[in-house]
Image (cartoon, rainbow, N blue to C red; front, side, top):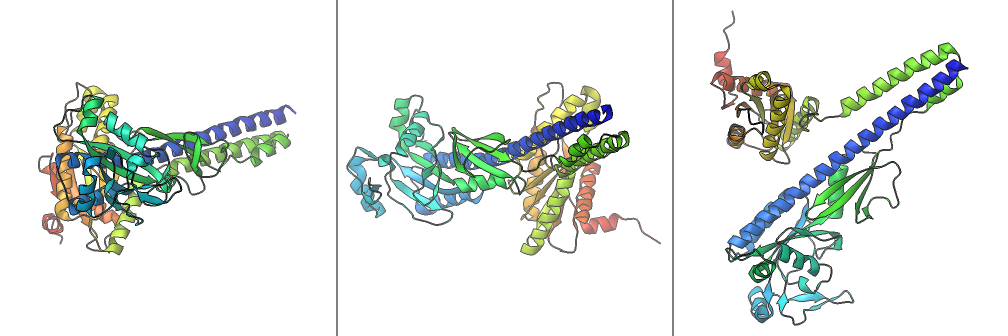
Length: 480
């Protein structure tokens, strides 16, 4: 009886630990998905602010110039549509309508559209570009829209990027709209009154809710249940509360969303039940051994599934190799070229020896952040171990890859470590191209990039070298 009771207690403890481990993993998955969604949204919001700066600097621009800006806004990230909203005094309405060849209209209470009523100021949609088609609502007056006007006024008065709650989009569907005020170039904007007087219009972008949710789901296991909430209201996912779910915030402009994730995986209860009913010593010992093995196997499986470097948050070597093969396969299908950059910090061992491993780890994290700022969302960025990093650049030419590598080398060289006693470091970079020959495998490309990187080391470090097959053959020793 004592042995049986001990086996039951042991089973409960192990089950509780497994359950806690799964909850921790679920929370990590939710945070990773939220960070990915937030990063994509922040990229779009940042680009929108850049577009607002362009509109501010340009006193006037035509449709073609706007379409160039709008296309760059929607090329990356999750923006569905973008628009320029002009501040139009009522006295200029007739001239605006004649010049644009459109009428200013508004949505009536019954849902139909009518010509806008007379008022002192209009906010008509002057330029509109939509990624997936839909109604091009040029001339729609947002000043008369009760769902949008308060947020336009807030963006005007604060000078910050402002997001609406989930609203019906003029171009179709439902989503969130962000506004960035555009002021006259050089006009004072220190006070609310000055900002109102200097307002020229707004740069606007819209996110479809399903696109935001899709970005989060892409970073989660296939079987996960997902909800996207704002102000305690479920906008995507099953209704009701998800039991034992993990949550993570998603910040978009001045609003915070809540990502709720529930992983259906649960600890196996068959073995604890066996321990509870089998009371003999041999069965208890055997069950304990099996349980320990099963738990270790489960933890090892979770570790294998994790593709993230624990120090920097970048992809690790295993995930890097998988992604490199995938990018090379896509490059072969699309008949495009790509590049692999191998990056090795110069004399990094000196930092660990002189200042200790904590200072070295901090510097590695800082360099990882430098690389994040210098790479695209579509690039594959990984830490292979120690002070070695790798970047996969899809759909890029040799000249472009060389420029990217030199820009990365310069950024690392100019980075000032946060630790006051640590001196700036440099890096040696090797570049190898792929896609020109579909028979070349990922291992070959990695070897070529390594060879180029060591050539950079031999050339004095702090430089970039591109793998040249002919030079490699000429430098190889003759064989008899």
